[in-house]
Each structure stands twice: as structure tokens, then as C-alpha cells.
Length: 95
Image 1 (tube, one colour):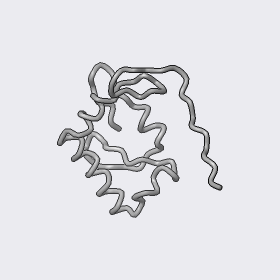
Image 2 (cartoon, rainbow, N blue to C red; image 1 turned 120 degrees about the horizontal axis):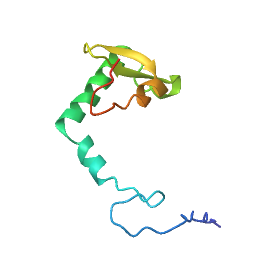
Image 3 (tube, rainbow, N blue to C red; image 1 turned 90 degrees about the vertical axis):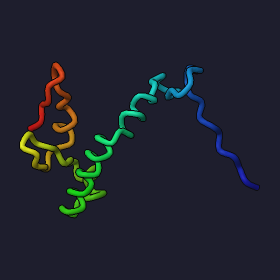
Image 4 (cartoon, rainbow, N blue to C red; image 1 turned 180 degrees about the vertical axis):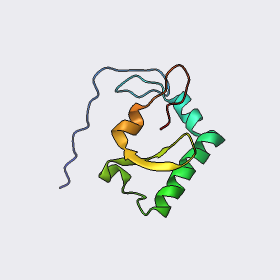
């Protein structure tokens, strides 16, 4: 006899369309932004470099990211440092 696992109940109900039920955040803008040609190219450059360095698929486990620098080079950097650099007043804060 097969037992069914109980379903998880999320606290609070958000009925807005295209939102994450747990946080209420609307991800529709994020989805459109990540689909733009510039972002697709950006991610493909990072993935290409990761394959070249033979770290593709291992970056999260090792705690490092590839980071774009102002000169256009890519360097290995701690994930926490790379992702904390968000930019202030619309200016880049690339390494």
C-alpha cells in the first residue's frame, strides 16, 4: 500500500498573479530582464570562461564566482564579495 506524503502548507495566501506565494514577490520583471539579449550574453560569457577554467558546475560548491572587472577581464572572487557589490547611484562597482 502506497502512502501519500502530506503536502506542505504555505502560511498566508497571496492571490496576486505571477507571485511567489511564500514572499509575495513579483518575479515577472526579473524574468523579462534576465531574458534580454544583454543578460543572456553576460551569462554565456561567464559560463564560457568557467568551462575554459574547468570550474563549470563547481563554482557554488567551492564558494567562488567569476567576476567581470572594469578592464573586461574575468577573475575568481569569493561569491559573497562579488554578490555584495551592487552599485551605488547607478554606477558600476566592478573590481
